[in-house]
Image 1 (cartoon, rainbow, N blue to C red):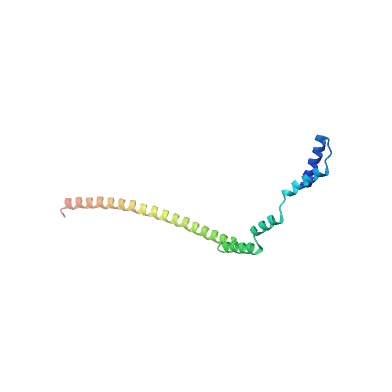
Image 2 (cartoon, rainbow, N blue to C red):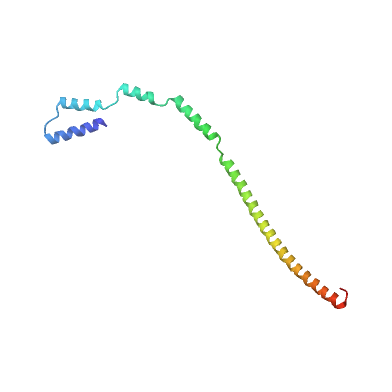
Length: 135
């Protein structure tokens, strides 16, 4: 890529100045291009910061251990089925409680009606006993 840019730069300079580029100009441009490139020391320094194969294997092992405690798709599917069964049971229990509540309410209303009937009958029996002289 540096050579491509250099050739563009050179052709531009020739068009602009109409002066041919000398060998010294070309050497200066090449030297400037190479001055921006990494040296062996730069590469060694970077290599020291790079992860080694052993580092990557350790990282892979750590990631695997992190996923070891995770549920599998099958386990999640089974759990989902269990939760659905529990939800169905809960809905059935709710329906049963609702039925029992209605039944108890009806029994209470029936009990109140029977208490009123008993009170009326007791009152009438008392009236009959007084009229017949039994009371």
